[in-house]
Length: 237
Length: 372
View 1: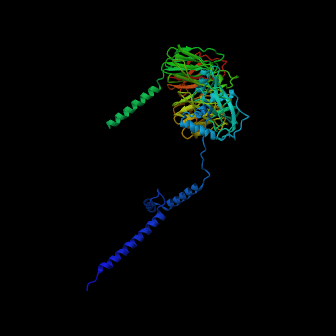
View 2: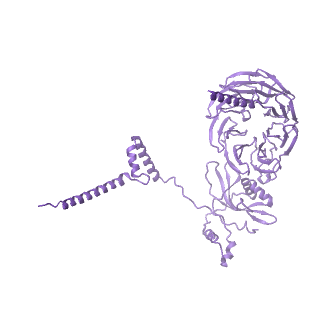
View 3: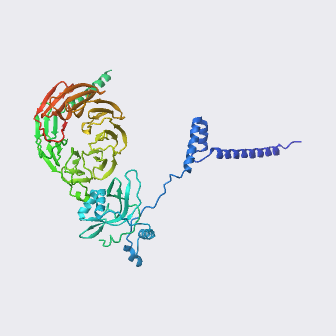
């Protein structure tokens, strides 16, 4: 009588395949858990490390890993972005257009909406502030000939509006002792208020005094949003 | 073998050509505290031309000059800048610097400061002259049109000439140094000197980097981006100045009663040598083979490369101003109004020219020379 070996070998084969599959799963799980760490440390790279690293290399590697992990937990050095201050906007220019439902460029409308959302309630009008002359000198000394020639050409002088106390800034060099934010405008006899005439003269600046030179106001970029100065700019040319 | 001999001969020829060109200076230009200008033929010691001084009450300190292809351009302390034909000494061009018309807008306080040009060359760059004045103004003026290209205003009196590195005009102010774009006159950057080490003297440029010497003898070497290469603090205070400083390929020499030699690359002391104890002054340091030549008011000294005095020449009349090296000789002016030359061994002193105008009323004894 003949045996039927086919059935037995089939069962063995199935058992072998299942066994190999399970073994493969264990290997994959092991690789995933113990070898594959991240995109940079691929399994092949890890194998290479095992094969080529000396004891010192491993010690160094483990130390680096520890330092990276610690620095990831350390949040003391994180810089948080703050919203940039916005230039004041003369919304009256657009009021009629809004009332008449005339076309207003989308970007202007957006600026007006954002402007109206601004909170100026915490601003304080500064007692220590530059005079018109001091503001002009700070501007001219900063821009030198670019603005000096502009003022000469237009026979203009600078006037400064309401000054708001601004937080003192910390820097490596000289210590600030006073800082204000204000709008400025150029004026002459013929045309009155010329605004900023042209770049590089701006309409808003910070004016700063330093400890080493406590009697002189220096120009700086404006550091906070302030309301549009309608008194300074009442008769805009 | 033939190829090797040819190469050796070629090298020897090139070296001899170089030696010849170094020793081939034919004209020496000189100015003094009296502000006369002289041009001499170095070979036959003849005076080629002489431009008289003027306004001697104000022009009582030396001011320098710049020589280009055709002209010698000299600054005067009273604000005059004159371009002379360098062959004839004829006046070609002249301006008188004054306070800029827009100075009132800056309103810096120079009420008690006389308007002067202190120690200006002026610089001549691409057809423009660049200089600074005592009212804090740094200026660029086009020579052809006399039009002011730009003026940069500072609150400080400027005591030294601007320097140019690439496209930057660098100026030492009281307590700080400023870099200005040479074309636009706009400030590019500035840096404050250490409060305890004020620098008012001329900065020196070498290999694109900058040397400054503070009033308290701190020698600093840094890049135009203000990155420090090294600092060296001399331990003995004396009347050192960059006017009597020498920079060679390997070392920087400066000092007063004690001369310091500092390794240029590392900033380390190579040697220091006491030149005199009292009643004397270091006037100038000039390069020589294997050491330096030094002039003091009373004598000329030759120091070897270890700082040892190997030769000295006592002077019959006190020296005045710089010691200038040209064609293996050293030239200097003495208080008796004579210009001398002496060989590199300090053995043969000869009268080069008698009758240099020495104004006894000048405030600082100094001369400036250039040979080509």
